[in-house]
Amino acid sequence: QKEVEQNSGPLSVPEGAIASLNCTYSDRGSQSFFWYRQYSGKSPELIMFIYSNGDKEDGRFTAQLNKASQYVSLLIRDSQPSDSATYLCAFPKGGYQKVTFGIGTKLQVIP
Amino acid sequence: DGGITQSPKYLFRKEGQNVTLSCEQNLNHDAMYWYRQDPGQGLRLIYYSQIVNDFQKGDIAEGYSVSREKKESFPLTVTSAQKNPTAFYLCASSILGYTGELFFGEGSRLTVL
Image (cartoon, rainbow over all chains, first blue to last red):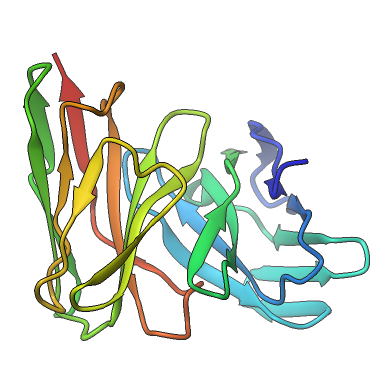
């Protein structure tokens, strides 16, 4: 079983819709989760992190964590064409010394 | 402005040559990392370092070497032993204890001819 799994997409949504990106993980001991956004040809940038079960909102972004089911989600409300990018979920491992990344989900927002 | 500087942005290498990718940060971060990114495979950890003069292998360290002589610098050497070195290389740093909050450089794209 992979440590972290993401659907590579592409996920296509119309402008203004809600985009839902999901990630499952295998390590029940994982405590914190991170979402990075990566535009084509660029480096990743951190956009959200979540430590506790439930939802965390930041502007148009909401991160959701369900430790019992071992999944973490990122919702993007009112999706814009500028949100078109690859979204990577990540979590620390190895005694919190290093970070494992999923392969990323490519999101396309259609105007 | 604080940040991470990687150089060169693009590099071409002939087979059998070693190349060194530079990574410098002025964020005063203790931890530094090197990742490799290939299409469809996400980011894979090559090496990481939490303090000067100490570093650990990541998941794909074979064919690579690093040094950490200064807090600000973490260069990566891609040796001729690396069988498939063509990739996008990303350097990152973080505050010690905040491992998930990585700051990335702009990356170096290496192509082996």
